[in-house]
Length: 189
Image 1 (cartoon, rainbow, N blue to C red):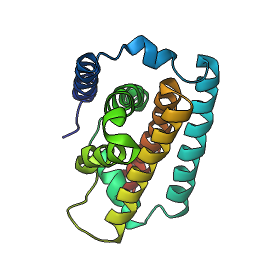
Image 2: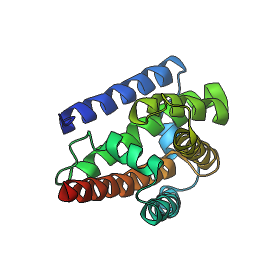
Image 3: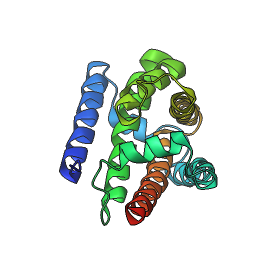
Image 4: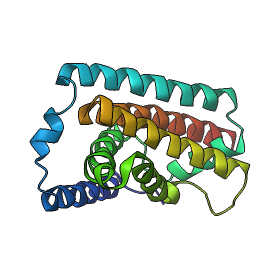
């Protein structure tokens, strides 16, 4: 059974709620976070560039070896989502905003880049098959952790809007790739 869009959006809203609670407890105004870093238009451009670069590299490696076990596991995991129509876009936007609000804005000042990236990886273990400790799982885990570190440094040096945009673009590219891989697998059956 597919995980409906509504469930995905509610889980993202829950993450954003946790982030806002942490920020409230830390007395960190959200407006200051959104306005911090480079000017908004530079953050948006940097986020687009970073998202296209990271998403493009991911897409190229995926398309180069679509039958690789790590690619197949990732595609099977994310294919549980309802990726019909515009859903990959809505899921990606919601995840980009909520996860970066939580991991970068709320948790990174408390846990540092490496700690927040580790928490980012731990939250994504449900989406990946890390139960088996093998090469495919190590590739997946290193990719998620590496993305967390990259976004962490971008947050520190560029700003929150940039990482939200970059995360959303990486997810858009990834979810449309998963949909393409899943549709190809269904045609072969």
